[in-house]
Image (cartoon, rainbow, N blue to C red; front, side, top):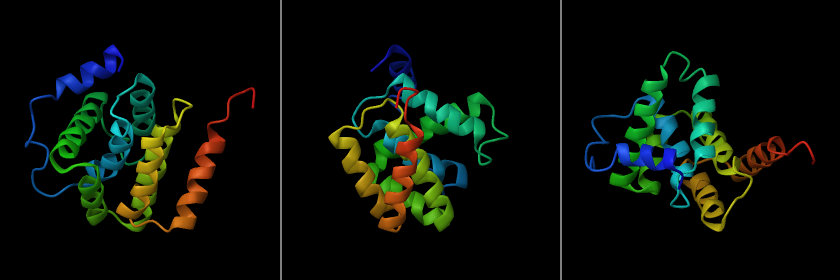
Length: 157
């Protein structure tokens, strides 16, 4: 875990039990699978945080937020995942989101997993499990994952 990633995780340490308050709004519900993807391998890397910031910068879901507001969403998502676990947090997100927004959250989560150029076993398992947790059609999820994989090709591909 990098110093920046450690600082983000440390910033929200000790706040267990404070992540789930009331119903989830759309912003946090979409953010939960994205952050679940980031923490899937037990590490938080700078590339993953940068990818989340890129999602927030270019997604209409977060377009009116400041950087601070988006960082607070990431922190809240980390607390919810700590409280509920990956599966229950993703299922809670599914309860709040339309099918289309579940797919949006899934694609952003896959982007986070692929951003460092390495997809480990734990990350592959979380992608597979997330398909069920978010109730996404398996064929459609595989197609979305393949597109994200293609998007990650380097200049030398």
